[in-house]
Structure formats: structure tokens, C-alpha cells
Image (cartoon, rainbow, N blue to C red; front, side):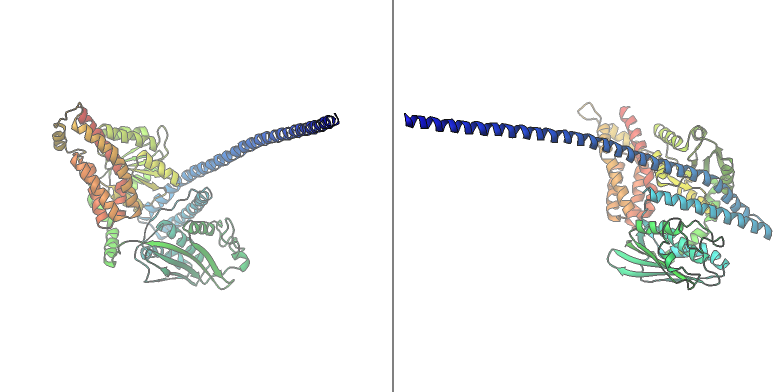
Length: 571
């Protein structure tokens, strides 16, 4: 019995221990569940806070985006509003200066021109700064002929330099390739800004431009540009903050020199955008040397001195050429500003173009377009009743519906931001001319797009009829099947061709243009195939840049051809 009693006691103790452990385990489980519940509640609270913060951040981000968009839209509108009257002032002053004037009158016109150009420079600086701050500044890569660029800048600025009693000297490294790849407009802008600065702070001295080759490899060259002057110099303290927006040196802020302090900041931003470096070396009272370094790509082929001279001679006799061919040019001018209409009509008359129809809005432009054929259309961007974009879309639609040849449409606007240029191109315009523009700029634009002969037919109907008469075993015609195949492949190939042309890949561009030309000819698509043939020839000659103006005509011509073929197929 004693043994049984002892066993029972041991079992009782074991049960008590197990019960105790189970109770403690249960308590631990309850504590764990309670802690987990607390943590879960905290997590839910954090998630709510995070969602709230995300909503707040998104609202703040959207507010910032909207503010940025509003700022850009405001700047764009202001730019247009300023540039439109400035175009009238500068244009009329240019036309006036071409007429017989006394010395006093000529001096007065020069003062008007100088003041208007200064105002234009300030507007351009503010616009550039806004685009840079908004991240909307885009580089436009193209051919850079540094010798030609320097020559242009010298012709432009030498009168200003001499007016200050300064001498302008040039030193350009002969080892630099004739043609490089970069953004020629921005490089020119930076050099002009630095040279004008050097001239402003120098009198009876020297402004020296140096262009040197720093590094050379198979595909690139690093170029160093220096603008040295013998002017007032810059203190070390001022040098440290010189490239910041709105910052000027103490002497630069004086009324003697004037300015906004934006020029150098914009130069630095542009150089940075081109992945280069910029700086200054100066001692107060001993002059300054502003420099920047850029790595530019090498271009295939070199332009000879002889061909450059021939090109220059052609440019010098441009006015004569325009006069000889002018009778075949008719222009539709759409602009709601009476001053600008009068100015452009005077400029066209100066170029020998008298067949000009002027209208004041987009609706009138469409009516004029329907009543008569024009060599080209000059279309203002912003007009009442119907703006230039909508008018262009309707004109392109009419051309497609009626199988008309595409008429070149040139946008005219004071809003020169890249986004607005893109809108013009998307609407179907062929080119862009920013206000204010000179007689020379207008002359080159008209010469570029002038069409003095009758347009090529959209289709070669004899080939189309031959295909249309070949029936297939099915319900669909062979022409309809071929058209579907053509529609499937061609837009993508056109985009590939565009990329090759813009990037300067002559070999690839030649192959794609040839393929597109052959495919179009086999379907009897006449006009579009001639465009492909011209592009192919330019690419073969290594002159892809000359083909760029033709690119904008490809899609309208393709759409017109498809529409015409579709009608024939249904008939």
C-alpha cells in the first residue's frame, strides 16, 4: 500500500506541475497575444499615418508640379506678349534703316535697335532661367563647325567691341576637327555672353578668344574655350559667387555697367547640361579669363575650305536668288496683330514676294486655303476665334481628305519654349520661326520651304490600277491586302529612319530609306517615294542633316497615300 500511496503522490505532484506549467503557458500566451494585439494596433495606426503622409506628400508634389506648370505657362505667355511688339519694333527699325536716312535719323534708328535688342536679351535670359529651373531645357544636337561659329560671332560682335575702343583677336587650334557634334546654338550663346561681358568691362584694351584642343581620341575631342580681357578684373571674393543667379560683382552692379546678373548663371547651367566645366581666372585690376571645356563628338567627313567659301558666296547672293524666283511664290499670312502683319508684308515685299494674302485668325486662314493654292503658310500661334494649332490640324485633315499635296506651314510665335515647338510639330506644322525675326531669317525660312513647281502626284495611278485588277481567291483584293501590310510596317520604319537621320548614322539611314522607297514604289505611291529617294541620296552623300527638313513631310505624305489607296481599294 505504501508503494501505491507513494506512486499516487508522485502522480499528483506531476499533475500539479503540469497544471502549473499549463497555467503559466496560458498566461504567457495571453500576454503574447496582448502584446501582438498592441503591436498590430500600432502598425495599423502607423499605416494610417503613412497613408495620410503619402496623401499629403502627393498633394504637395502635385501642388509643386501645378505651380511649376503655372510658372512655365505664365513665363511662356509673358514671353509671347513681349516678343510680339518687340518683333514690330525691331522689324520696322530694320526696314527703316534700309531706306535713305540722314545721319541723325540713322543714329536715332540705331538707338531704337540697341534698346530693343537689350530688352530682348533680358527677356531671353529670364526665359532661359525659367526653362533651366523647370528642367525643360533640351539640347539640340547637330553639326558644330567651330571656325564658322567663331567667324559668325566676330561679324556680330566686332562693331560693339570697336565701339568700346577694344581690339578683338582670335586664336583657333588648327588640330580641331572641321565638323564636330554638339549643340551649336548653345555653344554660340555661351561664347557671345562671355565676349559681351568681357567687352562691357574693358575699354581701350583687348578681348582675346582662344579655342584649343585638349584631348583627342577616335570619336571625341575635348575643346577648351577661353575669353580673355584686359579690363577691370574680379576680386577673389566676387569670383566665389559669380556664377549664381542674379549675382553681380560690386562694380558690375553700378549703373555704369548695368545688367541682371543672369548671364553667367545661364552659361554655367548650359555648360553643366552639356557635361562640361566652366570657370574664371582673374585678378582685380588686371583683367579676366573666362573658360569652359566641352567634349564634342566627331562627325564623319570634312567640309573643304572651297565648299565653305562657295556656301558663303551663295548666302551673300541670296537676296538676288529670291528676287529671281519670287514670282512663283505665294504666301498666306495669318496673324491677328496688325503691326506684325504690316511688318511681314513689308519684309516679303523687300524679298520680292508680292503674292501675299493676309488674314487675322485660323478660320479665315482655312477659308483662304480652300480658295487658293499657296507656296507656304506663315501661321501665328496665338490668334482669336481659332488659333494656329487648330487651323493647322484642319488644313492637314482637308489635305488628306482631298488628296492634296502638303503645303508647308511655318509657325510664327513669341513663345519659343521647346514644349510649344513640339505642339506645333504635333499639329502638323513643318517649321518654327520665333519672334522677333530679321529679314535674313525670314528669307532663309522661305528659301528652305519654297516650292516653285507643281507638286508631285500622290499616287502613280497606272501602277495602282494594275495591282487593283489582280484579284485573289478570297473576298479581299490584292491591293487591300498589300495596303494592310504596308500600314503595319511603314510607320515604325519611318520612326527608325528619323532616329538614324537625327543621330547622323548615314549607312543605316541609307538602308532604311532605300527599303521604304522600294516598298512605296511597288504600291504606286509616287510622292512619298520621292521623299524617301531624296533622303536616301542625302544619306549616301553623308549629308544626313540636309535630310532633316524632309522628315516632317513623311507622315502627312504617308497618310495621304494610305487614304488614297484605301479609296481605290474600296472602289
